[in-house]
Image (tube, rainbow, N blue to C red; front, side, top):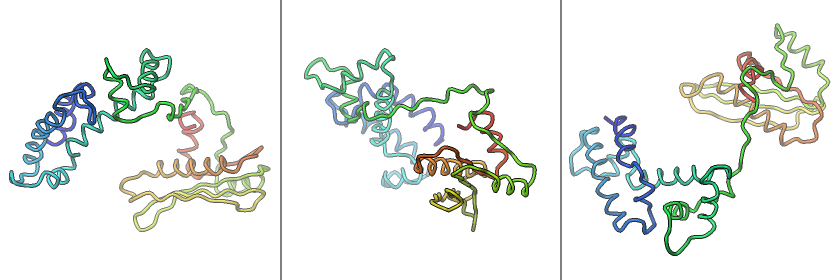
Length: 249
């Protein structure tokens, strides 16, 4: 019942919400009243799921069913719509209109885009554009990847490496807790390290933690600067093979 309400009912009930239920705007004459009437539907669902009495406080019922209070749910959907509009490129047909709507809040003949963007106070200029990976799935990576045949061969390769900077990453677990760490060496001297604790091992996989260690290594290299050659060491063959196929960059 709960999942049906979240995946089906809410989407149908709040369809086109950004046109008539914008909190803090004058788009609708009775926005609060409309939200209150729709919230009664959520209350009936929450009471049915929990089996609570009709006199049960709504905050407690929402907490037990893990459902946002309805007015916060409406704000969340409105904010998502505003965020998607703000992230549109200028080549998009609406990109220019979003920029104009944010720059000036007209007094008359306001479009829904004016009210949504100014109600959420989102500035598209504060969003950072990230270029997606340009590699094809079957292309090779731009860096050399080596998987030694044994532990001894890996140690010999690390000792024989001529890189001025070497970073080693690994995962660790203790008392059902899991985390990752990365250590940076410059000229064989430990300079910096990063650690990240994830929650229980039940919520995270080994591959995910190994990938986190690789990300920590990348952050150390980024912070170091002035590097001509770097070697990254990781003990996960699955991670290295995935990286070599251009999936993780």
